[in-house]
Length: 503
Image (cartoon, rainbow, N blue to C red; front, top):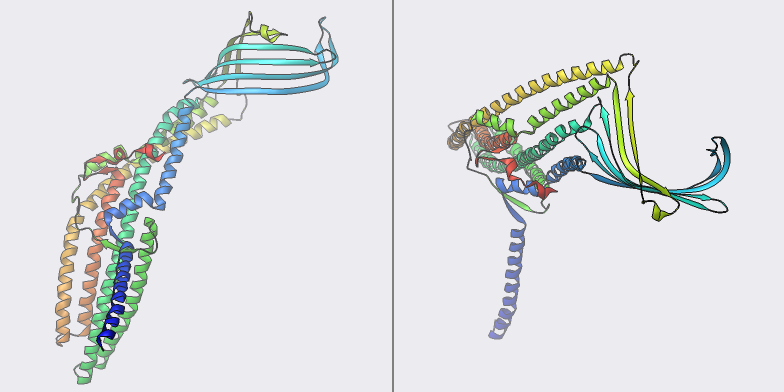
């Protein structure tokens, strides 16, 4: 090649090399952007921020929050405005004449009114009110007559007597129910963390299985090739060669299945965390253990103090007591007292209806007495009393089971460190044993059955260690869920949440 052609070749080659390098760099950058490194902690954090399950528990909490806010608003005064813009009526009506006689008169009239009322619920179950109103009547005839009726102020109250007071029980039950909802939200948070741990370690185990099956396939492929050579030399029997071939075929099939399982577990993890489907995941298995021992009595005290079940028990008892009181009071007579005092005036001229108003008073007392109900109210009372007894016994039993469960779960957690040490040592021993057995088989000192046993023990030990690690983290977060307490930082979990940000 002459210098001119060589120069042309180099001039062409140089830009091509640059383009290839740029494409390679862009591809590498793109690949890096699509690869996500996940630790257990950031998997949990991601799940608690953007997983579908998080939004479900958030709105479950918000429904309870707005129910509680609705209750709180009923404790405040509320204002109503009611107006009848026009009520036209043309008919023959019976009226009383000035001489006291009744007569049927054909008349047409239009009635309009407006009324403003301030109501306030009171702790006794009654209602206090202040109102102001104005009414206008137009008698429509050849000469229209207009009259006005004003009620500048009217003050009064209504009070049930010897009746069930729902407001009294709402004031007891609603705050308990809201506190339960807050703690349930935190407990559900810990449940999401446990789901994140499950998906994280399921993927880690699938990845480990794929790595194990890849190694097993390569080992079985090598052993099969060695076996074929040894069979030709007459050092092994045909049945041993067939076993090697069967191991080779089985390992290839298992490898394919493990690949499918790996992709399945990966997609489940991605979907749970709300990540894009085209990302690649690199996981880092945690090696540290924040705690290895928890005091059972301390955990039980925090569980009784923080767990939503404690508030649920209290709510069940309050509801049962409320139903009993309602049934008890319904057996007897009840009354309703209404009293009001106000000012009123009437005139044909609107500007005079507030001059020298007259006072008005009203008192009303109504009673309701059950005379014959064939024992229905008594039966309802006995039923409510039985339900209260059942609730008391059920809650007592549930508390005992809850306390026992906390103690048992703490005991399970406290032995996990020893189990992990055993699993780690078993993994090391099984791996070393397999290496020795493989060398012995190649040298003809052991048969294929002994090698298969060593291989299975190696695989089981590796999986067992990872499962023990998963069990540790699952148990740790389960205790957090039971107690709503972070034993690592010694903090109540509910204190770490700003519930105002959820609204």
